[in-house]
Length: 206
Image (cartoon, rainbow, N blue to C red):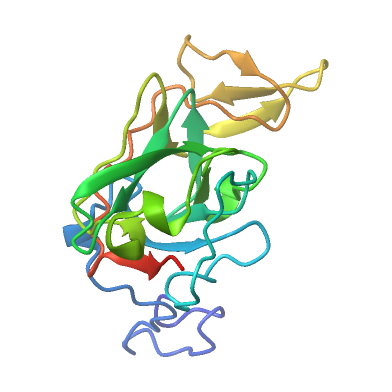
């Protein structure tokens, strides 16, 4: 808040500005692009059940969709277009691929920057199928864009048209409507796909 303004509650123009929020490390983590600053691993009802809470996952010969969900948290609202996946790793050092987790819009909260990836149904997660009884996401893992992308919400104007679609409008001539509630980026930046977690996000399989 600028000094000497009613919003600051101080009529002294020479006073220090009032800092309401201070966020560290924005330059390092990429101000221009949404960056996955952390991830948790859980299921449909508990985002942190297996990591970082550390509860043991009970494997099964044939999983149910939503048994394992990886939640990636970005530093701003994002849009997901097309097919974006992440790979669940196995072994103590998470050095081997175990299964591909697919982006699920119904579990995600893109307005809050939360992108969810679910393990498919019928995957064998019994002990015998998991090296060293460990699954997780490596701290240096990369995303698999496939045919899709994760993008930030740019500085744009959203307008509602008569047929209830949202149109991107920044004054250019390239706007195009999308389905109501599914906001596709006209020209936003892609997400930085390295997770850059401080540690491996792993959990034990019994």
